[in-house]
Length: 286
Image (cartoon, rainbow, N blue to C red; front, top):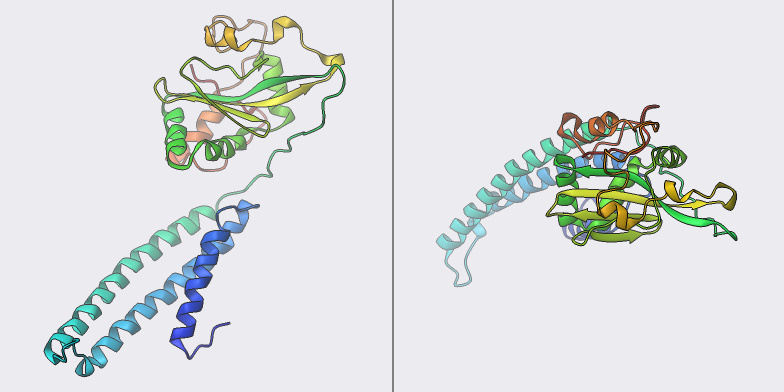
């Protein structure tokens, strides 16, 4: 608890509290909780700005007591002035931090966080089969942004981000309807494949494409025909549903517009996806 009158104890406690926050904020179970953290951080930055000013004033007020290790008062006084100046400069920079934090706070307040899609983990029953349904496939600018995220934070972060566009049964139904179902995650010779839980991420920095797939249990009574399941070998050879020349003309194409809009609108691709009745949870860029 803060003492409000002992700067040494309160500084130590503030340092420990920030250390604890740095550890605890690595994962948020509910992203909406970040809004409250934003508010507390903004208040903390304002208080820190005040502390810097007070530290600077203390150096100026007691400059007549400043000496260096050899007892030189002139040198000690100069160091006190220099320290005060640096503290004031730090305060100016902290004002910019507060402005940026306030802007981020405002943007975050406009986000409506959707519930995390429910992923089924039921055990396989006799005769049931595991298939991979496509959640989305990206290339070009959209893929480059995800590839940058992979380079910066790792593939697990990319899976967590892209899973926002998995709308559960809606995504599965669209994949089944359009033939984006595979017996194994499709990947070429140079593609990298990372699996986490029910998801598989395939990406290729050289070719500039990223794909997210999810495992789907097919009950025996709904087993797919061989023609409806594309092997990984066929897909990487360019003859699967990712080739627009081979998609059956009777199948309805999943709209590309909805995902593109949600990924690049206002240049803020980290914004939560806008779900609509048109969106089937898959963006196809060819």
